[in-house]
Length: 272
Image 1 (cartoon, one colour):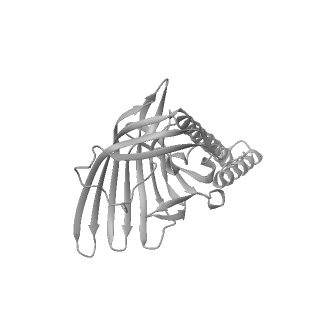
Image 2 (tube, helix red, strand yellow):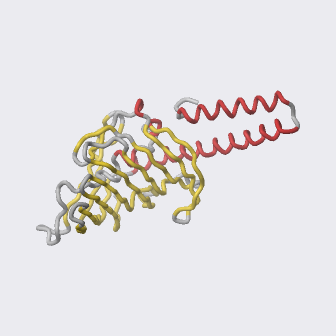
């Protein structure tokens, strides 16, 4: 099948060989049992692949449906200084806006602008430092687009298990960036590095919707030991459709001399 990840192709070949062996060895005994189990496994794998395909279609449609979104953003930063054994915490609440750029596309992808501003000018509460690590462009950036139709094939997927998250029965898949198919770069601590993610995605088994994504960036700049995140999603009505958007993200960064935990949460949504 065109566009099928490499591990999926290998698995199909193995299943086909087992099925063929079962047919040649006769309809009874161990051969029949193995062939039957392989057939069931293949059908289950096809169901999982179908969920992933439907998810990609929905992610793409969600981006096409989004024109403008406003909300409140709460950022909580906890920092631990390893050398001096000091802890500090900073919280910031402000306005957040997502706007689609009119009639502009790059490589057939829609362009969006995401921005934040304080609740009041000048800010009365502490402002985050410029070098505070954040997941930028949370709603329409790399981390949200990676499961869309045009970007999904740049990841290799493998089924892990089923699990219930937020009262949803989810299919859980492992994924990893395929370097040969991905040339995207992201900023980690202000330094550009190739996108190299390894993680897991929770997909609603019935509705084929994003529920949770957890991943770590494996290509890091000098001085950064860990850069990993978790994103939880919620539903938001826009016109006649309901789209899935991030509602909370947690970013963990470990440097040589300190650890940083950043929580980004979003509420009071308005979509146009």
